[in-house]
Amino acid sequence: MKKSAKKVVTVLVSITCVFALVIVLVFATKGNTPGTIDSNNSTKINVSGQVYNADYLFENKTPYVGNNSKVLHIIDNLQFGNYRGEVSLQTEKIPYGATVNYDFQNLVEGDYQKAKIENEERLKLALKRNAAMMFCLIENLDNLTYICHTNNGPAEYKLTRAEVQKDYNEDLKEYSKDKNKFGDFAIKLNNDNLIIHSMKKYSPTMSSVIGLKIMSTYEGKADNIRYTATDGKLISDSSSENKGKTLTVEENTPIYWSPLAGDDTSLKADKIIVKIEALNQGIKIAEQTLRINKDGLIYTIEENANAVADVK
Image (tube, rainbow, N blue to C red):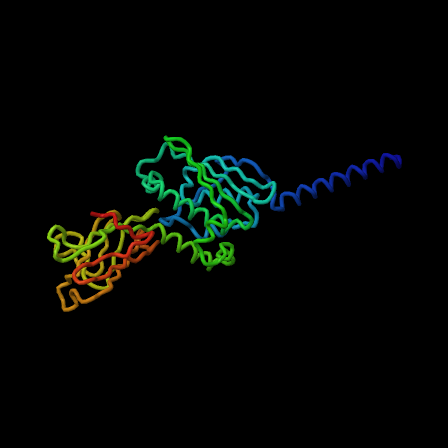
């Protein structure tokens, strides 16, 4: 082969190697593969009960929003993953972002998420929890846009890292520094999905009801709810067999708390705590507490984001 031909071959080989190296480097950096992600590329994991599966989510932690595969796997294992549509990633320049579309036009009957999707306030809260998970697991993600397509048209919700960060004591990135810490963070968010519905006030002088009516729902897959009271008694119905300090019933089944326990502690406690646990196949997957304060013969619950006085 002539020297000139050898030089041409050498140059072409060098250019090819450099080009290949550039491709590898581009896909290894934060701006890799921007654009739209097809909705069928991810494997959906059906976790037994829990809204957030800490083990699986932690495996998909990534420094870069441009990591299509991991970002998509994270989204599909948050709330509403089964309704997820097109996802687009904004990776060209800071601030980096993601836009997630959800198709809520044909909700599945019997889906435990249905009531949440149809209630805008609960939907926004759920999306904010999803955002907390994404900001925790995707290090350089700055902005999130959720577009929810309903029968009434699309609704858009925008969240920034700074906005979601206000709800947490530590930097969201810190919660995913190690698996144990992330596990605790996931448990907290799972607990947030246990909602207690209760009467605001109760008095033993009320003849129309046998106690403070309580009903709990878990926005995941729970088959039973277990209640444990520090004082008084829990009643599922008028039967004497369904009373005690601990009571387990099916989800969405109302129970009653009464200070009249039939012993010498009746009516004495000024502060009562009812622990509520969501169970799936006998395993606890979430926990909340309902605090009840006594003033004379009036018992009043302490309301918060997870304890709502909306039962008559």
